Image (cartoon, rainbow, N blue to C red; front, side, top):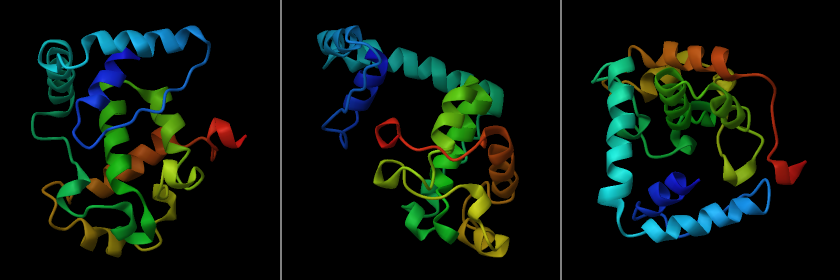
Length: 165
C-alpha cells in the first residue's frame, strides 16, 4: 500500500488518492507512507527500476507495447475498447504474474463507469478498424494477438465496483 501511494503521488498528474481499506488498520499503512513522501529517488525509484528490469527480462527490452503512442484515450479507439489499459494489464500479468489483479481490473471494463472506462476486447466489432487505429504503433503487428491473449487470460465475468454491489 505504501509503495502504491508513493508511486502515485510521485506522478505530477496525481494530486489526490482515494484510499480503500479492507480493515481499519489499512489506513495506518496509508498514513505511514507519508513518512517517505518527497523522497521518491530513494524509496520508489529503486523498486521501480527492479520492476521494469523484470518486465524487460520477461517480455524483452523493446516489448512494452503502450497504446499512448497511437491515441490519447479509449474514446478514440474502435468501439471504445480501452486498448491502452488492456495492454498495460497484459504487460503486468505476463511479466509480473499479477493475474488475479489483472482479472479484477479487466472484468470491470464496461461496468465501472468513469472509474474504469472503456470496453473489453470482446467488444471489437471490426478488426480492420483496430488495425488502422494502431497502425503507427511499433507493435502494431503484435497488438491484436496480445489483446486476444489478454481476453483469454483475464476474462471471467463482468464485474462491478464493490461500491456498486
